[in-house]
Length: 161
View 1 (cartoon, rainbow, N blue to C red):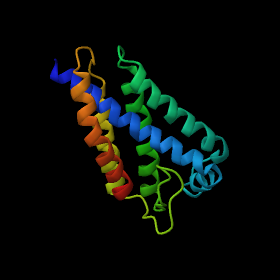
View 2: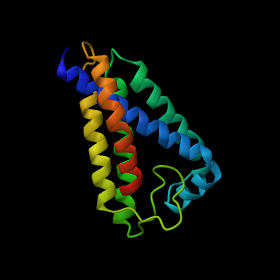
View 3: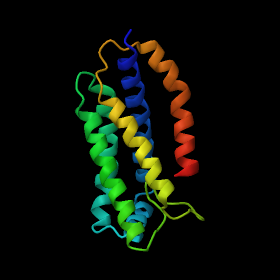
View 4: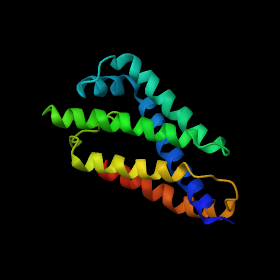
């Protein structure tokens, strides 16, 4: 068993769960998500409300199914960088709205802040770990660790996102 490969696999599983949940919550209320994108200041919110969940869902699948290549993790880095850029643009523009990162914001949602940027930085760090080779990973260990870390990560993202 290679520890680095197992870590890369766990990182990919966590990211896949994150992108999968994000896509599902956006599709569950697509009109609300389109409204949240518009409130966030993004142009083309109608088209984006379809495209982003498809991109995230496809990326979640690629992170899990493309074991031999690092490109899904590199794509995750790029997508997260774009999302972070939108957050920073809102902060710098002086109009921090609640983030539609995980679907339409709920009532009382906090606006984006430095914590949102830090959260995205942690997800980028996971994506960087996920670029490592998964060849030689201990699948049982990866699943066991992911069984604990995925729910904890998703709860933290919902709580602090």
